Length: 275
Image (cartoon, rainbow, N blue to C red; front, top):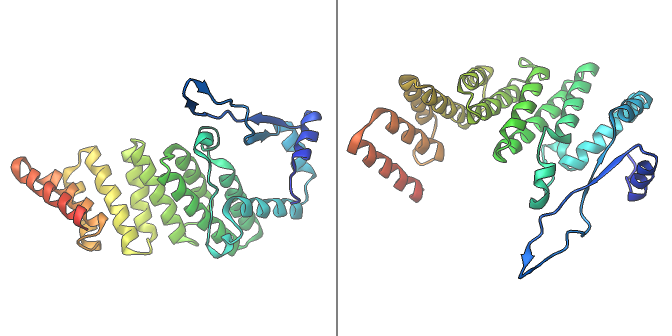
């Protein structure tokens, strides 16, 4: 858990124990002269599998735990135990390289939850599950649906549904949403309905899940089921909330036609602008 300095990376590279991959930057062209891309930038440090396996074999349980906690503080901030998470920000020019795959964040969360399960520490599992929900939300809002599906699928298998129903429900709900956005409506409906049955904590959570169900059913061509799900959203939300207005629009598209449909959708659009 000591600081990792440039000199350490250089030493490991010289010993062929670490690959140092400089990231290319997309720099703007000013006039007819292009700015040189040799400016200092972040680098990826990659250890080969045999090196990782050797180091893992040398670590004690306490050392491994210290590394995991240090990593979590690095990626989620020092206040993560209090539920206050500060995710790392990646400069736009490096996102192509650093914002793909499940990420180191997922590896740390998975290890924390697994560690809690092995030691019989429900509180540790809960903290890991809360981190998982927050990280999964970050992936979904960043439109990284493929990465979110990988993370959600794995976490749903190690977070106990009976012991942590609210967190399991949140993970399943986000998984269902991302599956729907990826065109997998049938599979999405399975997880969205399971999220409802597991026990969502608030009416807003339930309304959000019902809206995803309505949209998935609509994609499947199940008009009645989609309209019924949209009605559930309306029952759970306030008249001028975004979820309520979205559900109204979905129901109008499903149940109206011709001039009536155009008039209703225009009215909903105006209400959304004025909200």
